[in-house]
Length: 469
Image (cartoon, helix red, strand yellow):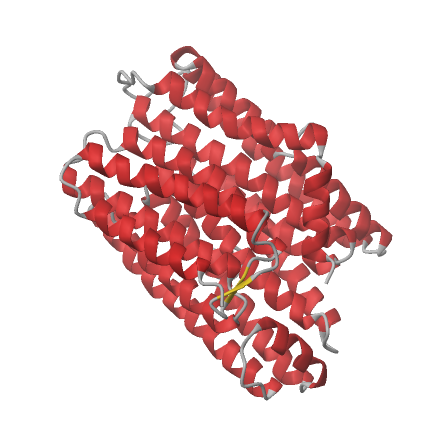
């Protein structure tokens, strides 16, 4: 039996412990760097030599897991590098605890990506709650304490709901094994009512991780309270873990009599999430909350794509891939903004183009990409979802999506332009590393734009392997 995944998890936990007990900042950076290298090598191996292999009975290196693992291997080092600068004024215990939790978070997320068992997915998603909670409380203020307890309570409630859904699903399937493959074969003969209840509970429960309706609020609070580099991971790789968990249940439901109903639930979830994201983008006065509501909006679009099915499901996966690069870049850029202004208040910040031209350019280009203007890959994914929606004859749904996207476009552009060009009302300070940090965040956006311009064949094949079930 292959034990590579088990070895990876044990080695990652060992590196996290070493990071937590390191005696200097240099040692913390060293152990974290070793983890990045190991993570990158593991991602390459799973995408090549390990493709299709079953590890430790509970993990499979399939196309879904390898794609999202590769995304995390690219994005997470940027978040850690920005974290090293973000935490330069923190003392050693805070610095090493933060980095230890970040390593553990990435480890738990990687296990979610590769889990071939619905119970193992649930276990490691719960583990991400504990890791993220410690990161959210990093500043140890009254506001972050409140956000941390909210995160633990709401996520635990959501995970408990999902657990009940898993129990109902396994009971209805009369399966001793909880592997997705076994459940997929069994659900075709299950009681439709039990399947509907199970799916509702799983989607509602995992919505706290995927950041869609109904438990999206906790993700917004988490991104607001956590340091910006950590928020770039929470809003991308952790959200992707929630997406993967829902996607795997969605795929096994494809063999059941309730699949059309399942798709309708996802469309409704996506529309409500899109409405929430569009409306709250106008109401919030904090740039990190602003980006978080953009995540709710984008994951809502991905849920609609899954709900429509066919080509739109393919586009939904592409949408999540593109969102990972773009949103992580935007959060990292906002972290640079904080290093100059020491705050995120929308109604007070301005003149960013004069203070950091590279960062301002990164935010403007990021806004263009986030709003799905060419050459953003989000343009391709959203166009495909809309075309498939039209082909299915859902014209009212198309009209609603267009209206909401118009609100999103106005909201995002007006806020970014305000930051870059409107008069500043907030004190500023020297940020010696702002330029090169802005360049590094811009590199992630560049990767997204390259995908949008070239749409590489290997990515098309990779996504096709995920959705052709």
